[in-house]
Structures are given as C-alpha cells and as structure tokens.
Length: 180
Image 1 (cartoon, rainbow, N blue to C red):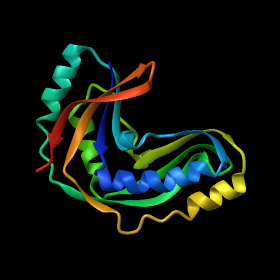
Image 2: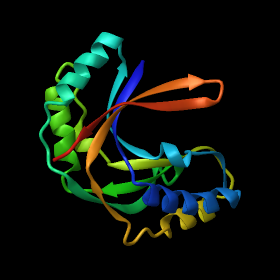
Image 3: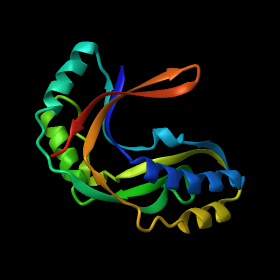
C-alpha cells in the first residue's frame, strides 16, 4: 500500500480554502484539477509502498512520538515549479514547530529515506495544472488570495494510504496519532 504521514486540516479551514480556489478554478485561467475539499492536507513524510507487516511496525513506532500540540495558520499562495512554469498551485501552512515534528517522525522512522528538511516547504496542494491559459491573470489571482485569521490548532497527525481506483485517487486513514 502506498502510504504517507500528514496533517489534516479542520473542516472550516478546508471549506474556506476550497471556496476561494473553487472560484479561481471557475475563471478558466488554467486546465487541470483542483484537489477535492476532503483531500486537503499537508504531507509530512512520504513512505512509499508498505506491506501490512511494515504498516504495523510504522504504527507502533509513531505511537512512541511525544510531541505537544501547536498552532498553525494558512499563509501565502504560490506555485511549483515556479511562476514561469506552473505545475502546481499551493497554499502555505505556517507553523513554527512543523519542521520539528517532521524531524521527530524522520528520526523514529530512520529506515525510510531522510527528507531534506532544508527544502521542506510546508504547503497544501490546491491544484495540479496541465495547461495555463492566462498566466498573467492566474498569477495575479493567486498572489492576491488572502487567508487572514485562518488559524487552528494542530492536535494530531495521520498515517494514510492512497489507492488509485476507478473513481480516482482515494485516501484512507490507517491511524491517528494525538499530540499532547
């Protein structure tokens, strides 16, 4: 099973972000796909394909993590690769302890490839772009999005599996890990 570790977003945060990006998607500035509202999340660590036995081991190790709850908020918006070659539109997750949580997870799951935390850009993917139809207007619209006062408490992280089905990519929570 293809698995990863993520932080879920509260429903009010998902709704507000999805609403703004839904309006953007309806403007016809790009061809591509918006991420479904229920699938909005921040990936902390990609684990790859795991067997049932490996999943049990990962769950056991993740339960050992002792980490306090912390505050997060939605920040600016941006693009991957970059503004000149738009493949993904994202929104930033600001949380001063997010990198530390990622380091704790990497340390306890040492057998998995260590992420290069210097390149870690905590973000939520909003849209995958196949073709830009109006780059100037798309860049302007995305850069002008504002998510002021969209703060929330990060109380847990999740182990998730993703499966490609006839209905598209489906996510299933395998376990939740509460932060103290």
